Image (cartoon, rainbow, N blue to C red; front, side):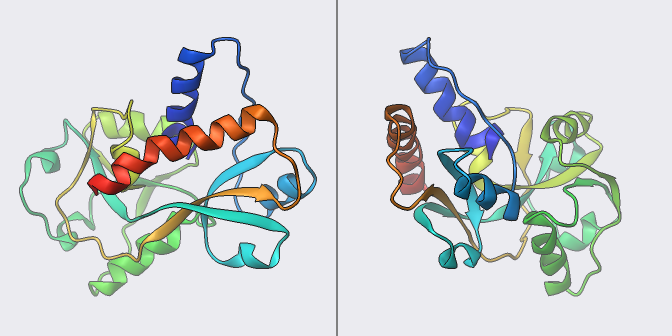
Length: 203
């Protein structure tokens, strides 16, 4: 999320207002909600699961998205017109840790095709490390499709033409109910709405 929608907002706003300073933290699940409740952050951008409904949070949906299988542009798979998921089982994969949102999606997708999930060569939360491995042309990963549509996306990454069954996940802005936002937080929210709107329509 930080390397996708958040980065796009920061790029746009710092071009217009070069003296703005952002503090970006990466977290998920309970730590993220705790930071919001304790007012350590003003807002969060996150995939939501429904668990947020009972919290004292305002959830504004930005878009729904699917996960896709991604390779580097140097990968032999990047030049195929159609790929069966079974063909990718024995490839080298770099994926997020098991407690991430994407992990159960991957397991469900493979099992929906009667396959066991692939053996992961490298498990890491580091997007930079995963992208560097993808650039070698040897590794595969799973990313939200929106990450490949945003301005400033990595041209070395390509979604593969493989049917990867998974339900859409909702990305939303989370804010604390009854908390007055700072002008910068309001500007951030307005900007991300503007950035995602044309891409949502295009999709």
